[in-house]
Image (cartoon, rainbow, N blue to C red; front, side, top):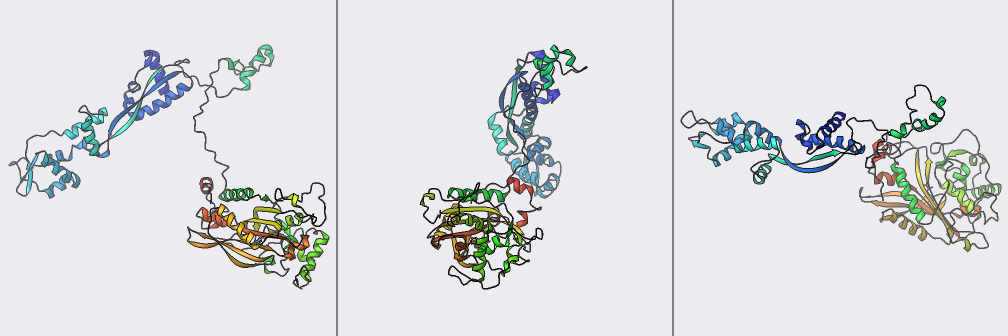
Length: 540
Ligand code: PHE
């Protein structure tokens, strides 16, 4: 590339200008050579050593078949050449002809040779009908090969194109003139203004500051040639910072909640106590979900901090003896079970914390310094606060939960839940169903169904199914329900305040959306990194 630049500069130096870049070298007539010339010109242009104009050309090049014919002659000429003159030898049968010049040439060539009157039948065989021929096709192709066009003109060229022997090819050539910085020596331009170039002025006043033999302390900035910025450059593809598909889907869901007026719950505590993960939700202490094979427990520290005393007592009482219209579980209460530390099995533990905070005013508490009781309070609804202190709220979270699962194609020991609660007076199951329809519609899922289900903390409970057109079946997408009075009333909520909540998997819709059927292709060390880099953001 350097030598090509030098060649151009030398040419300009001797001739003043270069009127046609195709005359630069003997090889420059090749259209591909002009591409390298263009590179050299742009590089010189960026230093304003030259300027140039470009011109378009349309030339013809031979197809592989055209090249073969230019070399060996047209099929019809080869047929003619293979045959004896009438009377001079025994006629050749089509079968033998095929053997000598090949199937394709014999087949195509015979027809044309007959049409041209070059060959004739003689008994079962074929003979030459004329003593000499002119192979126009071969001559024309050779002409195209060396000049890129035909003297005979467009009609003959069109014929060659139709026979797929030649194709058109766009080309470029250039006229080049000297630029303001013209010189025959290519100085390597500076890419950066450096401290060294600038400090030279200090050195001229204080020469003793100049390190000995330092050519860079020379006032270089004054005479330096700086490389121009190329704002058209494509730039280097950043090979980092791609969002994982789960994060993209999380972002979409988050936006749906935010536009529906929800506030995000803090969910940074992966470790919870048995109290907040289960007891506060009226999950019996003997519930199978709390067993070792389902929940990861921590051995250190051995015990959680104690929940607020009064609340703790109300919860243990409703479990053991009932209350708020409930008969309770009537099983002995275990402090130890309640104080166990575990990896949260659902983000409903965070919902419990937030609802307990939301009910603080109803319990007659006033926020202490830095404490917020109003996260997620529906804007404009705080004014509706009545004497019981309740304020309606809408909250969501999307975060990780942990379960001691046997891992397979669709199960990992950790996954993400999309959790939410709505707290208001007099909410009904119809509000929950209505919310679900709106929420899923915003994700592009119009077809949803509900199935009665059981949760210890909700009554009624509904499983949510969405029809999946790609899989052509109904898939479970979430679980939901109206929180029980045994959970809400110990927190301090008035009886007419109802709260509905739900938990939706983040992985399942993501897998469906990206057509992933094994969760290990989505999460973990087997994730193909190009999936992460290339998978587009989706709108459900
Ligand atoms: N916690 C439930 C689960 O893990 C989801 C849920 C949340 C259900 C809130 C009802 C209410 O599946």
